[in-house]
Length: 534
Image (cartoon, rainbow, N blue to C red):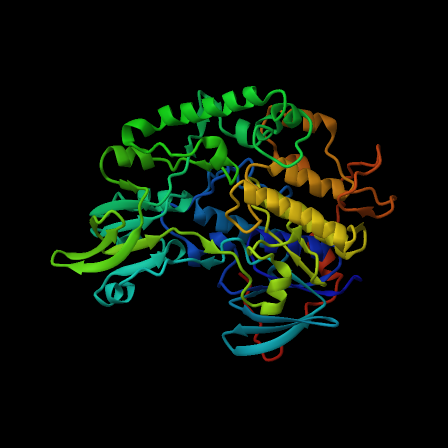
């Protein structure tokens, strides 16, 4: 693909914005379509709910070339993260590339690329692009269970909504009986926030998950989640280095360490006293991701402000003489003026044709993507942000450089047959570990995921940095300025580069704004009015 080729990106969250910035730098004409009125994706004001806060610390959750403001707390809230991304747009001159309030409703592959049908405030229009990047996010299609009696419940004044539809105003739940469905991060965040103003707050949890405190025996939890030694403890395909020892001869040592983490977390959060010890071991659940304790959640449970009904589900929504209620699988009735479903998302791309969707997924609905970026059987298409890691901003940024290298021909990939076999083996391994996000959840394997993409690009961190990451949490700043050597032939993704082929090259001084001014303007959309800058 040549400089000036037109690229459309669907989604202006972390992944979409980083991909836009990198591809503009590479000389492409980029246009970003976002159905929300602002940038941010999961941090958009249109999706904000009470208690929304980053799970990763400010040291790990930002782009390498755009640090978080120093005045931000260690775990920024939703408003702060949205403001940070607005600042990213200003810093790198992306405002003119954005089409906010514009939804892609259909995308059809054609010989020259893609034909897009988009909808904005002025109507439905068509446009085209040479390459399509899907950055709609892993949390784009909220899932609300189809409860028996839901229609009548709403008709009688009850509110049933998904977490992202709740809004950030606690007045909507003040003095009301609130039931939160789920036990993930968003469920606990919402329950803790509303418990201070609601008449009652009940969490209905089909399955309890382990929640780790921010410190364990005085040690920061990121020494487990964001160091090479810590991540080597968790199950992974084909472990390397210290991980090979921990999953071989040192298996008992690894299991003892993880059991110790489980015991410390149990004592620190008083799970036994509260009756909230999960049935599964921490190691089993951590394969799908590590969740941190919502500050104040267990304290509110201990004080009776939050009630957790474990190992149960809602079977019906009903009206009783005392008011609105929900019935649980054990037959109990709970008062419920508001039911908030923190029940996850459907992982799909609804604007693609059914034929294309079938090419993208296997029979279990898992996305068949190399490096969570490149589909095997659909040309002129890549994904951004489909790699769920602890440092998702950095993962998205490195993924954007991977995509740029692929599109400019500096990176080639194995033949389709070989690539397909690799993808299927990875998906099979994820299924055995309890895959819950259709092949996109990589659990605590952040550093390994980033290492693989950098290796494809003929980039390797300086050995001092890698050695430091063995015992100290990774620093995003360590990845700033990494570039492949330009004097080497294109590499094949997945093949090990020759010894000595890595080099760290400083980022050129040329600004993104200057690069953006040197490329062709984004493709216009017939009949569409220009969108205001965010």
